[in-house]
Length: 156
Image 1 (spheres, rainbow, N blue to C red):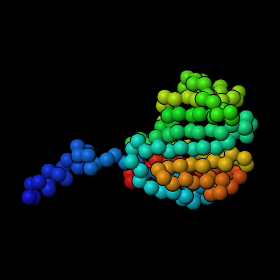
Image 2 (image 1 turned 45 degrees about the horizontal axis):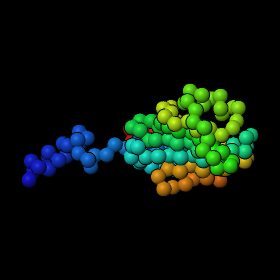
Image 3 (image 1 turned 90 degrees about the vertical axis):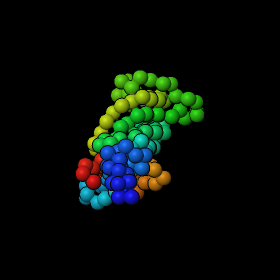
Image 4 (image 1 turned 60 degrees about the horizontal axis):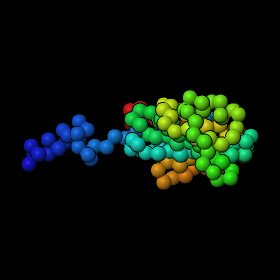
């Protein structure tokens, strides 16, 4: 029995067993005060979604991130069409231009990796960050003009 327990623990520590799921420690905090808003262990491949309203172009925006081991990866951005139509698909490298020129679009297959992302809070944006099943209203947490930091912590 001891041999089985030793082998099982060896497989777990080597990551060879399905029970040894990869994880990352995520922390969300107020940039100005350092107050921790959320601190949790998340599995890799878990989705993080930020929705907000672009006040300049009056479009709803959805940004999608995936938790990876050691970083957060932005994978998609959509500036939704106000009429509900499917926004045109653009190339990931065109995102910068479309963020500044306005109009609906969607970009998929993005691979932008971050250890830390800072979300600045505007007056009309109503940013909601969803991690797993938890939704966090960033404006309620830090107020207009505040900033929220989401980061992957090492050595959890």
